[in-house]
Image 1 (spheres, rainbow, N blue to C red):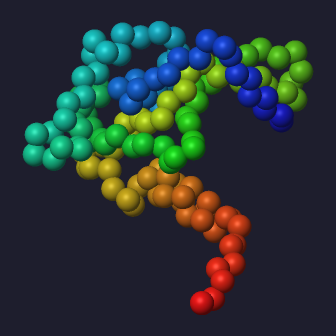
Image 2 (tube, rainbow, N blue to C red; image 1 turned 180 degrees about the vertical axis):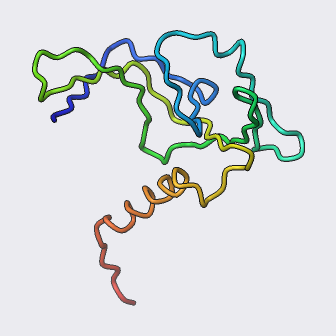
Length: 135
């Protein structure tokens, strides 16, 4: 399958208040009044830890900033007459998001946060080697 990512001139820039990576799948599509019902708050004891609840279960989260020179995109699948090609239209972009866990604070052991670290490590590994003259 071929994926084609198409940019639109009317992309919105979203904040981390708008983008949430939840520890579950939500089997629904459409527009919802999320801000009315999902109200994360910052825990006073730990300034970067956020708390919320979703469907009666407690969540703990933190804001994650994407590495420098990277952006996140929200894309919507378009209809394509060709079954081998799928068009994705970028509707929004973001530089940070809120990452959530059930009942425990996010840590460097979470696979998603490890992946964010790996981006910077991979860049360093694949960067050109510069010879430094010896003195």
